Image (cartoon, rainbow, N blue to C red):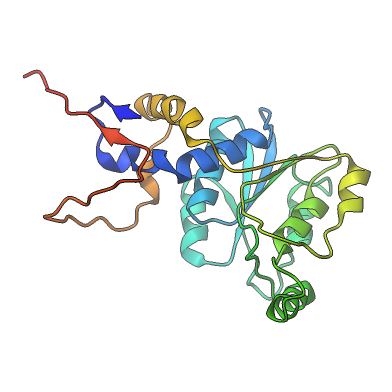
Length: 234
């Protein structure tokens, strides 16, 4: 997609990957106005899933991670945060407390196959992957299925690559939840998301922590976004 805009590079850079991925994650969560959404993983995709959830009408977004800087960034855009590294914090209990025992309307797994947990299931997954009895560590997927409310929606932008063990599929079936996942077709989202940036509905550059300038322009042969030269009227 060629850009004919005066927006700075920092605002359009992420249209080529993580912004569309995070937005599709929120879109797949089937968010309705006033919903509560839980997002596991506050990395770049998770951050854009949080921001997109608010754009799509979520009243509350609960962000789950263990990295202080990521949690602080999530709070800066309005999310409630849960730090699962704290000794007295259990994710499922925290989500029940925050939703009156019902569970979030939608859950987003922005972690995928490399989930971490200090609880028994985390140790179990590490051992099984170490001896090649399991390919993925689906800690977050298990938690999200257990946490989401009955008839809720689970969106999975996090990548899974192989065989999963101990996934509570019976709970997913019993609660009648909807599960949506898959790789993002970036080109479907670039133009509509660019329009949201131009309308100041979101500024994707908020996730940039440090900016540096180079005297050389990198040559990119795989980017999906290119900038067309435009002349500014004086």
